[in-house]
Length: 114
Image (spheres, rainbow, N blue to C red):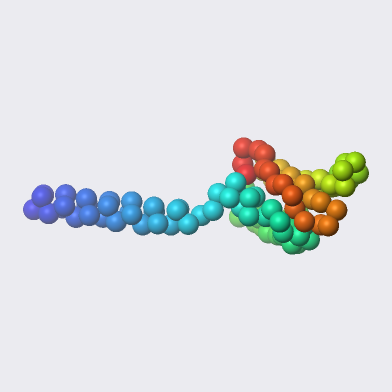
């Protein structure tokens, strides 16, 4: 009887490990996401980060709406503009270097919680 319980436990453990591996292998990394934005127009990125979104607060299970803070640093001398998006609740900053045509030339992220 004990052997049957151990075998069931092992089978359940193997299923959980396989299932979690399948789920988490599909989650894109921040680096892959940032690389995928290169060549896209900055207006598509602005729509994602400048619009309001809901966030679950740490206490009382209430929701807050927030926007990422946008900082635009223009006049780089070479025609590029730098767009920074700062998350107000996490240590995360996204930086996009945009050419004069509005296309993203480089994209990076910084912070412990990106």
